[in-house]
Structures are given as C-alpha cells and as structure tokens.
Amino acid sequence: MNVFPVQAATVASITLRATMGRKRALLFALPPVILLLVTVALKAAHPADASWPSAVLGEFGLAVVLPLTALIIGTSVLGAEIDDGSVVHLLATPVRRSTVIFSKFLVAVALTMLFVAVPELLAGLIATGGAGKLALGLFAGALAGSVIYNAVFVMISVLTTRAIAVGLLYLLIWESLLGNFVGGARLLSVEQYSLGIANSIAHDTHLNAHLGVGTATAMGVIVTAVTLALAIRRLAAFSLKGDAV
Amino acid sequence: MTTIELRNVSRWYGNVVAVNDITMTIGPGVTGLLGPNGAGKSTLLHLISGFLEPSRGAVTVGGDPAWRNPQAYTRLGLVPERPSVYAFLTGHEFVLATARLHKLADPGAAAQRAIGIVELADAQDRKISTYSKGMRQRIKVAAALVHDPEVLLLDEPFNGMDPRQRLHMMDLLEALGDEGRTILFSSHILEEVERLSGTIQVIVGGRLAASGDFRAIRRLMTSRPHVFLVRTSDDRRLGAALVGSQAVAGVEVTGRGLQVKASDYGAFTRQVAGLSRAEGVQLRQLLPEDESLESVFAYLVES
Image 1 (tube, rainbow over the protein chains, first blue to last red):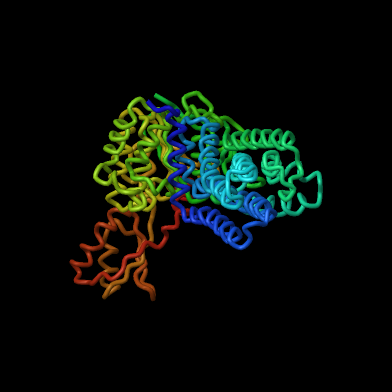
Image 2 (cartoon, rainbow over the protein chains, first blue to last red):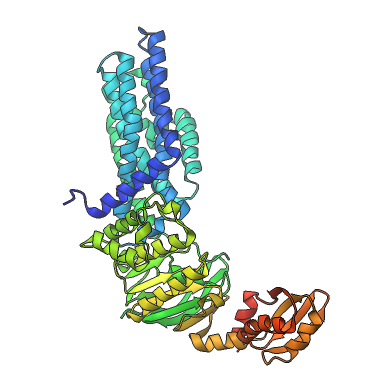
C-alpha cells in the first residue's frame, strides 16, 4: 500500500512531471548555478574577506534567487494547468480541493528547497570554508523562505491568471522598495522572514535582517496558513468561462 | 437512473445574460444540447458540471447540488471542450491517474476497461502529445468514463473529428445511453448529430427555444428549403432537368451559376449527380448557399 494517500500522490506526481517537463524548468535550474559560480569566483579573489559571504548569499541568494525561483515554481505548479485548462480534468474528480492545494504546494516547496536552499547551503560552505553559523543560518532561512514564498505564489496563481506579473510587483515594489524604506512594510515581507530566521543562527549584521526570529517565525506561519486557506477557498469556487459573449 | 434538473436557472456576467431562466429535466438516454455559437450551451454545461455558480435558480444532478460539491463527480463524468490534457502523459497514464483520483478499488482494471470502450488500446502507451484531435477527444471520454458514471457531459465532442470518428463517437454515446446512463452533449452543427436518436434541447440566445424528439426536428431540418449554387459545363441544360425533379422548388440562372432552391435537402443532394450524368453535363461545383447556422436555428424556432 501507498504511504501517501493515493489522490495526493497522484496529484503530486503529475505536478512534478509537468513542472520539470516545461521549458521553465531551465529558468529555475540556472540561478543556483550562477550563485555557486559567483561564490567560487569571489572565494578565489577574496579568500580572507569576511564581509562578502553574508552580503552575496543574503542579498543575492536569499533576496533575489530565492524569491524569483519560488515565483517561477510556485506560480506554475497549479497556475500553468489553470492557464491551459487541463486543471478541469483534475477538478472533475471528487478530490478535496485542499488535497489539490497541499499536494501542489508541497511539490513547489520541495523543488524550491532543492534548487535554492541546497545550493545556498553549498555556497555557504564554500564561502566560509566549513559548516559555520553563516552557512547553516542561510540554509535555515532559505528553507523557511521556500515554504512561505510558495504558499503566497500558489495563492496568487489561483487568484489571477497574471500570477507572474502580480508576484513580480509584490517582490519589486513591496519587498525591495517599500521593505527598504518603510519599516512597517517589513512586517509583511517574506524576504524579511527568511533573513530574520537566517540571522537568528548566523548573527551577522551584513545580512540586513530587521525582524527578530520570533516575529519572523510567527508571521511566516500566519502568512503561510492564511494564503493556503485562501487558495483552497478560491479553488473550491473554480469557474470555467462560458460561451464567448 | 440519474436525472439532471434545472429550475429557473439564469447566469449573467455583468450586464450580459448568458443563460436566461431555463427550466429542464434531462433523464437517462442521449440528449443533445443544440444551438448556435454563443447561445449559452457551454455555460449551461458548466453550470451542470459544477464549474459555474448559477446567478439564480438551482441545478441538481441526482438530487444533489452541482455547485461546490466535488462529491457529485463520483457519478458524473465531464468531457470538456478545450483540447488541453496532460499531453506529457501516455493515454494509459492519464486514464489511470484519473482512476486513482476517483479512488477506485482497482484503478488498473478500470483504466483498461475505459480505454477499451473508446478503442484506444493500441495507442495507450503513446504520449497524448502524439495523438490526433479525434484520439485526444476519445482519451478524454475514457478518462470521463473510468469511474463508470451515471451521467456523462460532453462539450462539443464532435469538434475536429473526421466523419468516421464522428460515427464511432455517436455509436458509443448511443450505447452508453441504452445502458440507462444520462448522456448530455452539446453541438452547434445540426448535421453532425443527424444520426443520433433521442431528445434535443435547442438553446438560442440563452433561452430554451425548442425541445423534443430528434426525429421530429430532423424532419423539420430536411423539409426546410435549401439554396445551392451549382456550377456546370451547361447550366441551362441541367437547370431544365432539375425543374423536373420533385426535390427542387425553383431554379434561377445567374451569372455565378445555377441557383437551385431544393425543397428536399436529402433527395436533391442524392439526385443532382445522377441527373447531370444523364444529361451529359459536367458538374463543377455544388455549394450550399444558406448554411448559416443562425438561419437553421431561426427556422427551427419559428416552426
């Protein structure tokens, strides 16, 4: 017998094959390679400088590579099927809508961890030359960010057909712009949750973390729960466009 | 025995009314939902299949509400119009996955049975991306049938099929209807459903315009005067011969060719080739002049 419920396993396996089979898969395979190459290059150029690892792996790894990869993966696990209409074949079965959302969310989280959190850990190990606090902190931050970002992006993909655009706007306007200048915006910034969690282990001022680990964790849990609940609600009311009128 | 019931169902989008106060009961057997494009057929099928909320009224399948009720899919199968399927799967994988989503006791056997019904066993291990349009339509039917549903809804199932595939699909629907299932399909081309028996519901402009027996409507269709444009090597000679036919109501010689008003569609199309051969006239082109669907449906609604 299957350990996983058969419906969830079926949804997950179709999702995995669909996501990895698309050309978009190249988009999320590339950034971790760049991250590792940059790290190796910097390590060769500045082996003794202690300030660049946290700056590069925090500001590039956690603040750029992680959200963009999660955006591509999180909006495609369900959004691509909604766009091309094949989701109807999945929804015209008695599968609970929560099962659909959770299965797809878990696939997105696992892929993001594989393509961002693991490379981030490797880069951290290379940069600091061992399993230091920075490498572990960045890894923890990336793991948490993989979970929270994907919950947000899966929800956006159920709410709108322009998920990538809306997700990019959130990342650029809210996280990058407002998050840097308006203190309150940081409370609703997934980037700050990841950095807060990373910093609780790394204790590195170069990470630019503004939230404490308690706030970051609590907000991360709330945002994940609320966005997933919204996604389930919205999927339960999934409607097809009727005749062209 | 599962019945589909619509009671005073309306659906609008902003100011546009797509379905207007429709009440109907659809029982076992094959029912055709006919109407021109944009008449509201898809909207109606989406309402019945639980993929659209009625703005007013109630839609039930076997007594249970269709909207926000995933459990309804245990006895309902849907073949959507859009051709998109999981094209990266093989036909067998797709139907098997659907069987698993239905939590069937023996998904493997159910998948084989459904694939057998649509006669795709030979192609089941090929990726769906390599399938023709007709094969894709059939694998969608197999997926919709895998849980042996009492109700099967098909949105434009004959679209893109060649005549042979169309006949096969019609035979399949007839057989499923004879088993006591409730089969409802939509179509905007009257001629393509000519061979089916059963009842039809005609939707025009979001309203139920006519409903009744296929045969009666078919008689109306065939007795409707049709206009054809015929081009030959000798228009006047064939024209003279056609005037003598019972199937022809009038002939006019125009600059573009012969304009023939046929009183009996079927008889005329069967006779015209023989007549021209007998007269030694070469038949170059035979074009129906008034095949606009709106005119056909308007004619049906008037009668």
